[in-house]
Length: 184
Image (tube, rainbow, N blue to C red; front, side, top):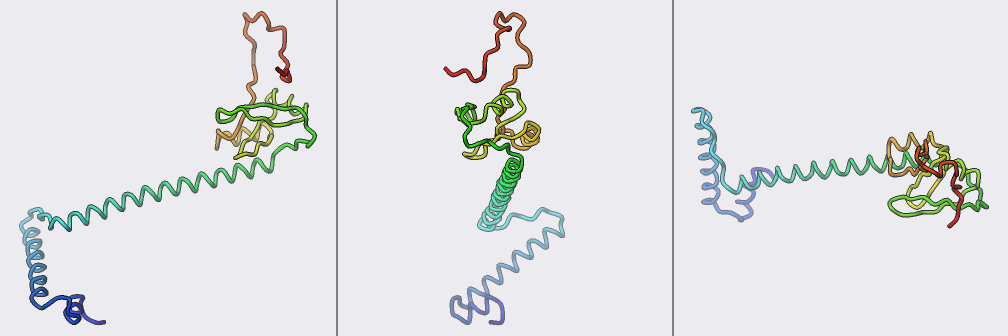
């Protein structure tokens, strides 16, 4: 199909010659107004209200698209970071024997969770030599140095035992240590 859209519409019979001439006349009139306004240095008057609405809608759509793209990029970055952390945890996790019988309770996301560890691992957890990494529903023991690296990236994944550095001076029971394996 050759020719302008107007010629094609005329050939099909969608519009008649009067409408075509009127449309051309309106276009020439509008372009003359713009040209005269530019020559005189005046600001160009706003176009018809429909064109203004269309232009505004396009701007709003472009802004929504930019915000949506930014959100998608953030989600992709977060997924990539979690995958990287998962890989680090997988590479450095400490083996827990299947016959581990000591239950170690810890809190994560305001929930108390339980992991079974060996007695030596429990001691290391209380001393702060081991930490717990929680990814989804899986908990794994990792060395504290690796936990520090992960905590810089995604702090909500790491659970550390609270290590008391120094007992209070006025504490009358300071000489008595409370065992961590104390069951209530």
